[in-house]
Amino acid sequence: MTGSNARKHLEAKHEHNCEQRIESIKRWVEYIESEPPERGDHNRTPSSTINSGRFKAYRRRRTTNST
Image (cartoon, rainbow, N blue to C red):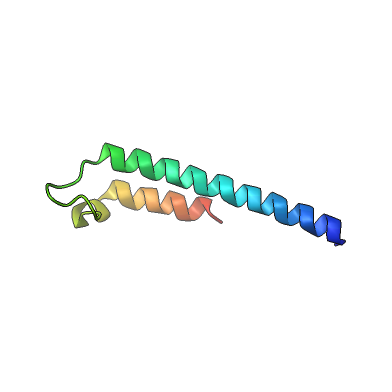
């Protein structure tokens, strides 16, 4: 790969990674907006949410889509 081609390849890869990150953030926002926090527990994800099937499905989608 020449320097110019390598640069274009890295720029395309960077763009793809940014798009993936943005999509992941959008999915996370949708998820946290749909799941209200437990009272007094606004700064961390409740264990009940982490163990829920919906959160596990979200994580599977996220890890599957990031490769």
